[in-house]
Length: 147
Image 1 (cartoon, helix red, strand yellow):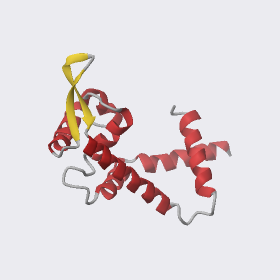
Image 2: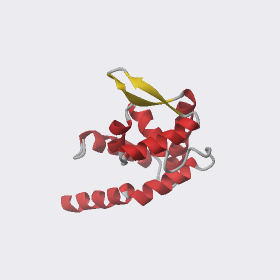
Image 3: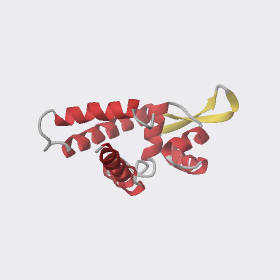
Image 4: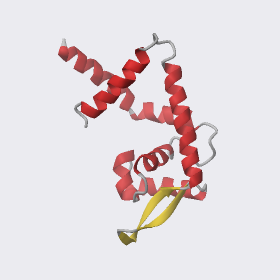
């Protein structure tokens, strides 16, 4: 029975982690958010919001891109006023990417959209079941095999 639970979780995670699943979700969330905000730049905005200022090289593994991919997308976001480049205090030769105030507002709007999208997907669940799932998922992330 335990093997069945592990397999079921692994299969569900496989669907959630598919690149095509993420891209479609990002496309849905960024619709109408402006030319620079799309499924390609969403991971940069989201990553910078989670981690704070980072170099393109440091951010790249967290968002599933290489350094040059991060740099290209950050350049689009910088032109739109959502990201700025600033000197790295630890290494004046290096540059960090950081969200601007406008970038922080954009990410907050994207987070609200994501929350609403998730809640809409859970609307048909029995009362309390979605909250229990959220608690279990948080515990799985904190204590499970991927921490």
